[in-house]
Length: 82
Image (cartoon, rainbow, N blue to C red; front, side):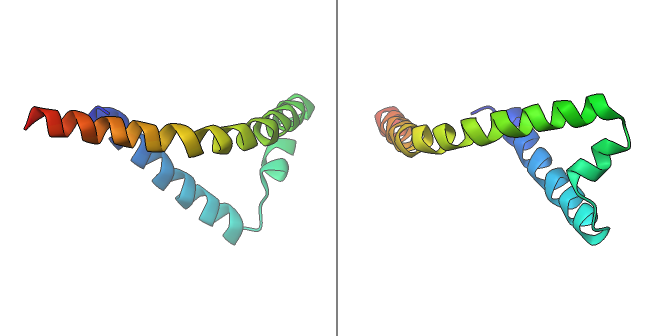
């Protein structure tokens, strides 16, 4: 994976943890944050939540197979270079 992708993913994870911590400290839920923006934002959040719940189980299931295969392929590629 290119370095810029990895660094971007790390930045996103760190930013998400910081924002999550602040929201938890303020006892603020994503629903409450979106309710202040209007009904349309709440509907988008609810749709996104249902899609996330639906897709997350498939993501984990697929990752259980794809990630080990990818790691083996990368290891094999590294061994062939030496």
